[in-house]
Length: 167
Image (cartoon, rainbow, N blue to C red):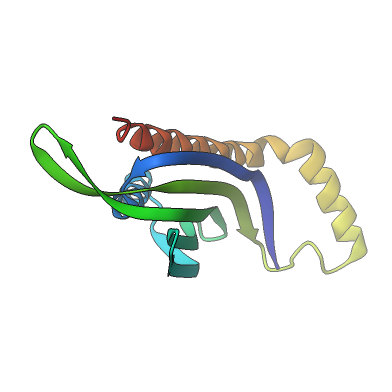
């Protein structure tokens, strides 16, 4: 059975202003490639156009396999509301950008799959709990800390990316 431990719960990033939706997704993809997250799994994607602008919701997982039985997983939830197309001129170059509200949440997980080896008998579960609490915790805290570091790294990169559009 897969054990999924939540390390970071919905680390938020909010922004209202000018940005590019396309470049935001490209920035996430570039960070994912740089950090070695080799899989992407789309959970949901919805785009609607209303009088107030374009609304986009997307949720996806990016996955980094550490060993045959361990993974780092980041779930990214993006909500964009009221995005309107605008033309911005800077240094004589006109760029097509979007103006709207962005809410982004990043949740980090550390997942292991030991195939129920320790949950088969109640005595094994007690032994596993004691081992995890007192002996194996330092060995598993390093990968869990790396998940938190990855969430923070992505958050800072996206925050810096959004600050590029401040005019």
